[in-house]
Amino acid sequence: MPEGDTVHQAARRLHEALAGETLTRSDLRVPKYATADLTGRTVLDVTPRGKHLLTRIEGGLTLHSHLRMDGSWKVYAPGERWRGGPAHQIRAILGNAHHTAVGYRLPVLELLRTADEDRAVGHLGPDLLGPDWDQDLAVRNLLADPARPLGEALLDQRNLAGIGNVYKAELCFLARVTPWLPVGELPEDIPVRLVAAAKRLLEANRDRPDRSTTGRRDPRLYVYGRAPRPCLRCGTPVRVTDQSPEPSTRQEPAQAPKEAPSAAPNARDRVTYWCPTCQEGPSPA
Image 1 (cartoon, rainbow, N blue to C red):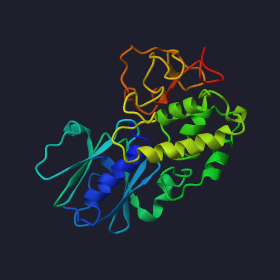
Image 2 (cartoon, one colour):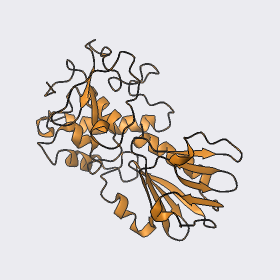
Image 3 (cartoon, rainbow, N blue to C red):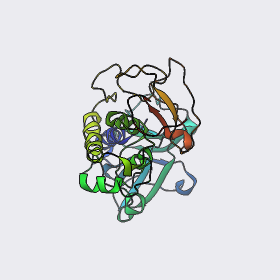
Image 4 (cartoon, rainbow, N blue to C red):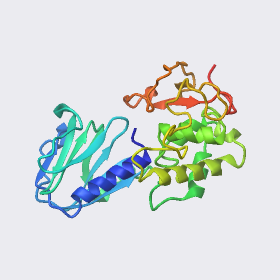
């Protein structure tokens, strides 16, 4: 599931494969840009911004993409078989003499002027893995709407950029509060601790192929994807439901996957895992 750390990894792979090289192949498979031809231009860099990817290209152009739940970029060597998905899921191809980058299931893909990048990412809060990181501003943003449930506030990229559903659940567990607790009711020290923990976890995982919040290989996560298995702290069965104010509780089989199923960006990608014993505060009935 793409979050700030996995997007950072994708940007690094794309940068290593494309930056400084002239494009010999360009194919943007979305109607608006189907006739755009970037061949002959040099890729300058690939930069992550929160959960967004900015591929900057000679001539003042930027290819902006967002992975959301299902999207991915794969890099292939010449002659290597493409394994990222069926051809009809390909949205973008950028190739040079040494590598081909293929974007699969990209829900957001647009070509814009580099000078206009703020139109795509200017709304984002401080980036947990970016040079603009500002912990104090992130805490202030998080607390700006005291009535807002913590889980929603953490997912709002305008507050701080890079947290997705996995980190939302894990951070709330580590702070021992539920994602439904209004941010204004958090104990005074919790917001700073949450933001600092988010920074620490994303930095620890930005170079790891398998994300871990426990510091172990198995189990890698405290609550996310573990319903109804026992809580690692207290043994109570982990629960799962939606983040929405009036969620419909549901249980998963004992052999639930470590990552929740992919979904379009709607209520399903706001699924929440939590321990009803360890985490204090409101929770669904």
